[in-house]
Image 1 (tube, rainbow, N blue to C red):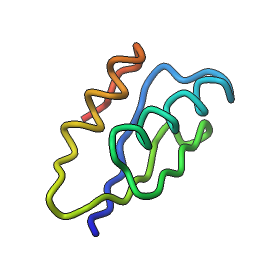
Image 2: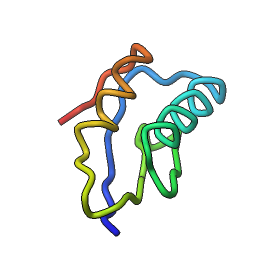
Image 3: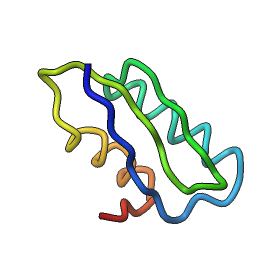
Length: 67
């Protein structure tokens, strides 16, 4: 398993947090912890996956990923 922290810009409420969490789970994340206060998502995922799919899922919701 790999673990990655993705910084996210544009989340303003718990609805945003829930949308990001669901999108990351649908993209194949094993576990997801999204923090509104820290403006990030911590995900664990399989070794054969890349973080790019998760970044795309976040950006498709209209949020920005901060590199």
